[in-house]
Image (tube, rainbow over all chains, first blue to last red; front, side):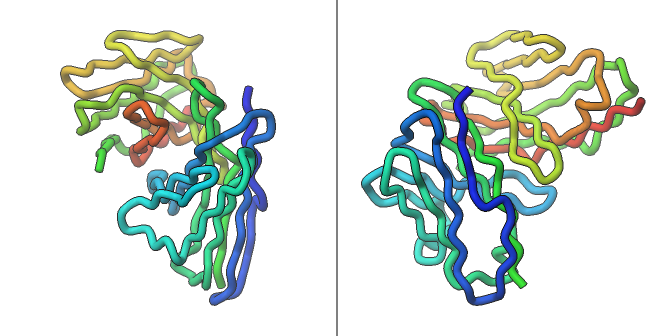
Length: 114
Length: 110
């Protein structure tokens, strides 16, 4: 099946620093990718839809200046958490789908902000 | 905002028994319904999807959809210890934007 690669798997950073997470579709082109966040024992919450070549679409309540999304190619979307704070600590997951197929998820990134 | 509810608490089932999970959704326009399995610290893994009313079986898993009542369920037959995980219900409207339920933890007791 299709593979979505996400990197890094985990990251620990100091408060105030920025962290970049990459999401790659390895064997298909993805014009759209999705970024989710999941807090412990909570549901996956859609943060934004990443659109290749255009601006991302953010869900209500998600700060676009804090969570920068870049989808510069058909196989790569990046999420940058800017000026991270402890409350941003969470499990971030990207997803994408080949045309007319189901969504596949990346392996997720556990972010811990000290 | 679409709402997807999974209200049951942790479910403990003996090995070999049937585990039954339920999910309700609020958006009548929803078109696609998914069950994902998520192990602790891992990303979700798709195990079943269903689009039409009725039952869909795949191995030990059966998904049931009732659009009139706005619920979708998952049955796991012959439960195995490896089935111990959190099961997430997800609902979509045809554009791959999915709304997820909170999940149900299943513990299969050997």
